[in-house]
Length: 168
Length: 253
Image (cartoon, rainbow over all chains, first blue to last red; front, side, top):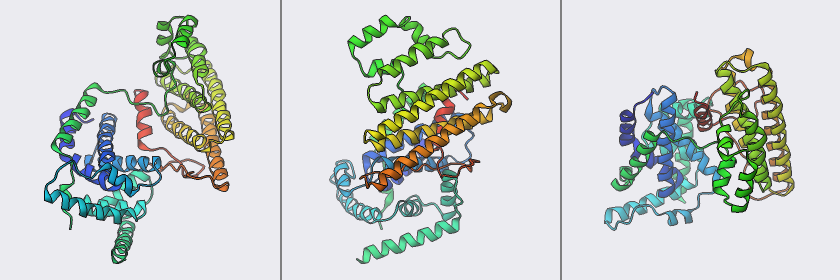
């Protein structure tokens, strides 16, 4: 059972990272924000009935579930939606505009991957997890046998795909 | 390469969200139920039709009694008010077929919650079990009927969704009941599993019909397991973490 202070400091530590993860997987700022809040609310409820060994992994696991739920509600994540939702808060600084463009291009590429491929790419390159950690998080969530090997394979296939998209 | 660390919540967003979460943490908000709760008090608030409300109040024993009955269990004085008055009213108030299906699922779930509460308090007598079993089966059958009706009306998607959600909820309740005293729960568990299987088959049936007829936008409702479950029928369906927790918390376990 986690106490309030411990829990809120996990929010302080991980909310941005979780937001980033959701942002790339859901291709939208507003959806990502909703998802983050839901992640922490669910994590709190879970923490009240269960012992938590690794809060960070738990948060990513819950985020993964919420993202899957969100995918189910909408059939495709279209690029039009991306434009609608907006990437960043209104801010005209040059860096933000450049980041906007790069991020947009990155997301356009990601969008062309399968869900499972996109997931590993984001967890590896945005969240910075290694194949072992990714395998652990996904396995506990899905109950499948997911080995780090499988993750590495999935990852390199995804990267090859991305590279071929870039060449086109 | 993009500096991903630039993609984050603004200070304002972060603080605001922190406040929301903290408030929720401190109030220990009651979790939202799995299915839209077609509880009569929920309906009174959401579908406010003044004339109906007046009629209902006239019919009810008293609003206070009706409300108090909600938490009752088999053996309690007010239990018949819960099943014969409150639940009956919920059924009547549900207008669309979809709403009716959800009410029946809701009521079925209530029987399972009651079973769990009684079992955990060592109050699950044979009489109580018999009553709950019969009632549960009756309402679970009605879920099936309504789902088929809904499909017949051309709303295959909603029909499959309701069946899928019902199955998920039955899974969650089964897992909880399995952890309680097996002797006490007895024959009830296989009956619940049978209904769950029926819900899963129905969902699959509806979805395959829709695929065959090429209905647009009919994505298969696949559910993932979060533990290695001992389900005899490995149709790949299971419970997501969130559902399990919500059910547990509602039961105070």
